[in-house]
Image 1 (cartoon, rainbow, N blue to C red):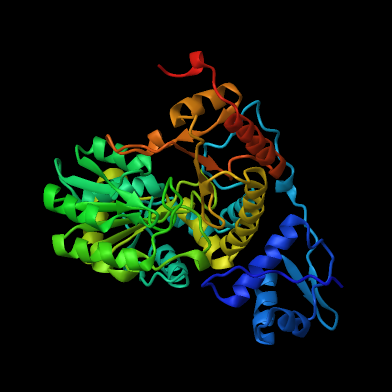
Image 2 (cartoon, rainbow, N blue to C red):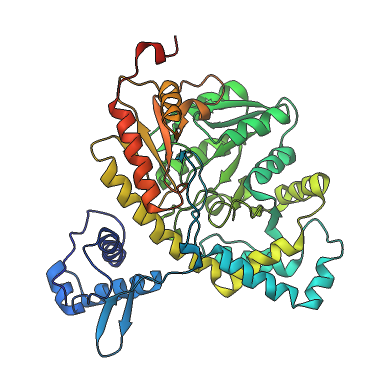
Length: 460
């Protein structure tokens, strides 16, 4: 039995979750090894100055995450790693990719293989899926999605959800449903490039707003509302892309008050992965009558799985339904059925547990390899936002790193219009196929950061 005792960080998070996070971190770092027995609950509670109930809940949380296993009459032990077919990974090519933000390869292939076999054996379902379906899709599938969302603090019913071909399709549909040519769309000054592209395709004006460490600045929104009479405000408030900041509830309420005053609709884009326990109340929960909620299974499960969804009420939902019908009629029910089966069976919950542990391990590598450098990120997020040393400009650094075999994205790629881009780069922690590849890529990144380009390598 180990004498392990964690040092809990100052946090507003529940104590039992802090202890569970500390167990995860200790396992990832090697401080706690597979097969080791954790301290008795009373002993750890006394050492930490918390109740036995807190430690009991922490151990139960860790067991749900798959980090430990409880043995009746014996105690709680660090779980042995369980290798699966997804642990055998194809080698990376000659370049290190820290540019693409996508779910790491885990148990998804196993889940998909089983679900496909189950669907193939269901003749009644196949007959339904071979026929035309309404734009709203099968009601049973919408009920399953709504039930899952209600369990994730997003109150809705089957009549408020619609399936889409991923998050980008959801953005385009939303703009098509609520805007007309020439309307102004507001967004974060540094934003997901898909919003600017969708606005361009629909002949909409896209204006970026000033931001701080909490997201869009209220005064910037107020000024833009007075100047542009906007129709929509697009936000990535849970994990801002690319800056990796999270908008607190107080800031959301400030922005919501302004949007209500000027009758601006909110597109709340929540496609970036973050465990549900780490999220702040969504705009849809705060103001469902004024919000379209956009999300997707592509980020958290697989980029090749082109399935997203929209949540909206009343007239907004009706406008979205008409836009969906006009753009593609409906989403193939077989693809929707794959995801719905994972929702009902708990496979998607298993994927989230696996992904949470995987990103914890990758964040530990980031902390080790880039110690001393300034970056912003959120626990378990796919990306980090790195401030470059003063001798580097972002566009020059990205070009220089690419010559060394390292793929990155500069802040310039996310700047809306002529919004001034900082000298930052976005690092994707999830793109490398293995922990060792990530470690090597970050080592190469560190090497590039420490170098100074020759004058003829600079853009003049």
